[in-house]
Image 1 (tube, rainbow, N blue to C red):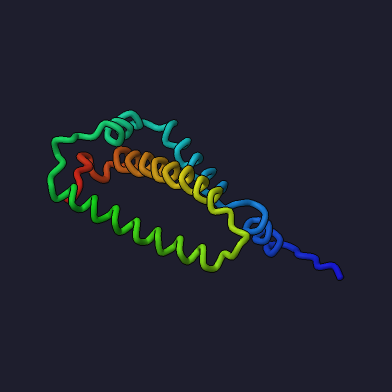
Image 2: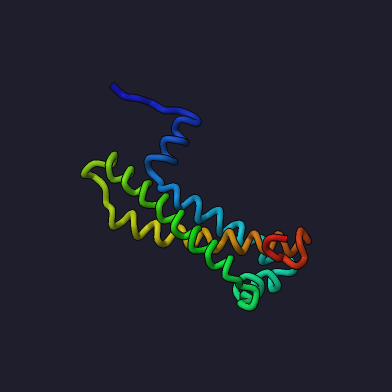
Length: 132
């Protein structure tokens, strides 16, 4: 018995079964970073993002950053335990680990570049100061 899948069912089946979703996320991120490179004020947003002003760091910011790090680690551990529990013996933990350690920081940096460019270009906040 042959099963034929047409239209959207074929598209979603191919998307979720054949091609890892991380390729799409990276592709969309590269498109989003390619567009701002053709527009003005990109140099200012790069300078804001990659040349931080360390004089504005206060102890409360450091404590908040440490709290955010521990919160993220606890969420990650919960997801990892659930993933391993329901994954069975067919998981490639090392490959998944390497893939996530490459994709997550890449997407985060590209999203930060796009976000700072939008704030600088669209004049949402000329100073881009946190908490104001």
